[in-house]
Image 1: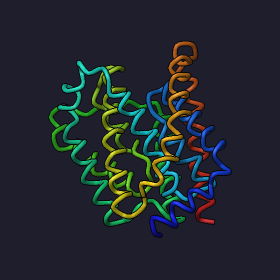
Image 2: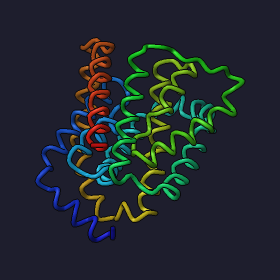
Image 3: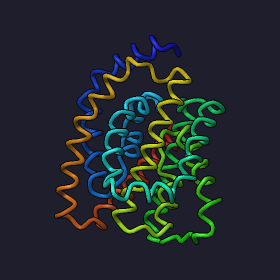
Length: 257
């Protein structure tokens, strides 16, 4: 698909503008409460009425800005980055390699892969199990997890699996874990944008629509941060994971039907 035809196709989705804004508002709320979920929820819900590559294109600006916001505070940024640096290198290699080898998210098979990724993440989260990674294994395991995350990102546009389980297994304190996820998500977002552009899947004309989605995403994060101080996070997160798993199963079954 050419850059012009892709832009025209996205322009034809203008009638869904309010629905897309509502998706990013909800995704922002979830990210504000539990520190992740904006790309996962956005890709999952938007893909119900648009192609995964279109959803991934709209996701770039809101995801990048909210993830950069999450990389603070600056005082602990470098120590956290040094610990997960190998993983970030793997994410770059896996995403760019996957985009070149497999192409950008497209077609029914990508919807199936996205649904499976959502179900896998939801099931893992609902088990409540805490994985542990010994410090001696971080040097070689981090890059492998990064490559796997990059391949999943290239295929589905979602970059939480297996990155988030791995980061949680490193034993970070809560604030450091939120920051590590922000760093990892920022890397994935930037490299995904490069992969989309390299495959003609992210023309500059799409930036306007993606930037518009930043407003509801930021509003959602502010609201989610406020809610986090007032709602029992475990209950909220459990409901989120159940809904995410059901959505992923529905997407996979629908695409295979």
